[in-house]
Length: 408
Image (cartoon, rainbow, N blue to C red; front, side, top):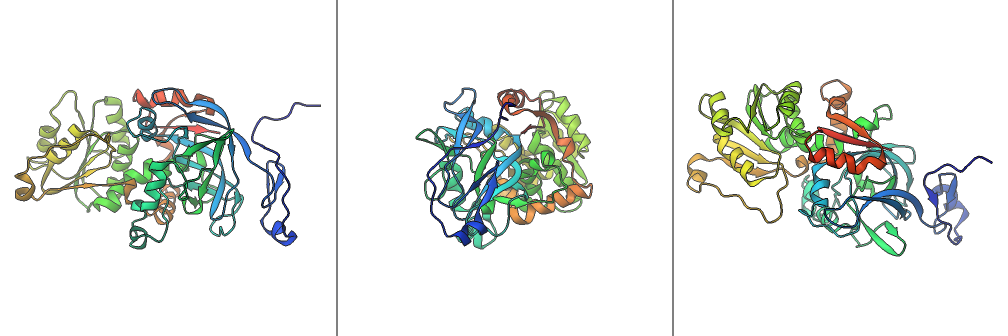
């Protein structure tokens, strides 16, 4: 007899009693087993789990509980590796532990809970890491990226009712909403955005965070006008997408700022017209020199550091806008020259997840990729196997990646 294939398996549980009509309508074949409502137990998968800050992720077996009403079970095909994952690991953004990280995910729907109508088993989806409840003040005015319920999920590591769908033995394991550093996960229906099956998920995955955050900051938050001058402080994965967004918006001058020449060269390939190395030049003076002494119309800070936020503010001309995209440590603060605020009418604004309306914006970005106007293939610097997740995080921290993608 050949050896059994490795992969997800079901934990056997007691058989439930269900109405046969409901079973035929709702039961789904997952890995060769039929789950009936109230029936079999958890699905066992491999996942990379964070148990302690500043320690490597541990790859181990985790149980995934069945999706409840309004929830979707997704088999991940790919997961991007992002600096937000690093900051969680390093403890700069405290999390409930243990937790399965990974928030830039794409995969295939395996099963849906009761009441799910927008996706079905077999659908290809890109995941949004912000949940919009659809009922709060922010959701009803079209700003689901600020949904209070979604923010609580992101920071608390649980579903809105305080429960999780992961466990190791009797211990609950927390979510990063998507938790794509595992083979499978359960997400709210609102977070699963269907995309055409012909789009490679290993490329579409980057739309779920890096592309949405960068392009969205330009289009949704700043609303950069045609012919504008733009500076981008930080030419990593998100910064490159700010550059792409500025190109799409019709900016005439796009100045990339970084301390690595290789990243500046990549920014040029994505549409930057100029590059400034912050190790060799005074960044603010160099930006002003390139703009006739005025400064830029828009400056985007994507690093999340107080000193670079201040640089972005200083390089904006009077009446311009500095947009903070990067997430800073919780205890950091930024000092600004108070007199300039009224006299120069500069605007300093934040952009969270690119002001995303995931069900609107993610399909639009996918369409831009399909028509050749948005670069996704070029963003993926390197792919990794799931067991190489810690190497991927190391390479990201070392500045070697625009985007690393784990492929399952």
